[in-house]
Image 1 (tube, rainbow, N blue to C red):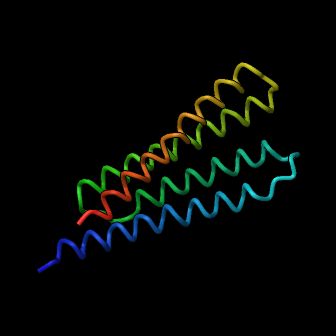
Image 2: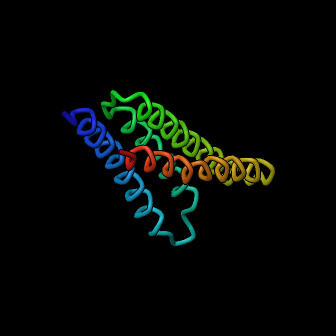
Length: 127
C-alpha cells in the first residue's frame, strides 16, 4: 500500500519544516548585529531556541524513530537556550569565569545540532 511510507514522508516534512523555520528565524536575528547588543541578542537567541523546542514538541509524530529525533533536537535547543541565558547573565555581571563556562556549554550544545540534523535527514531519506 505504501501508506507507511506516506506517513513517514508527511511526518518528516512537518518536523523538518518546523526546524528550518526556527533556524531561519534565528539566523535572521543574528544577522542584524551591531556589536553593542550582544546580551540582547543572546537573550533573543534563548527565546527563539525555546520556541523551536516547543514547536518541535508540538509536531504530531507517530514513528518512534522520529519521536526520538524530535526529543533529542528539542533537548539540544533547550540546552542552547539555557547556555545563551547563562552567557548573557555572565556578560552583564562581567564574570569571566562564568562567561567561559557558559561559552563552552553553548559550543557543546550547538555542536550537537549538526549530527542531530544528519540523523534526521538520514532517517527521512531512507526508503
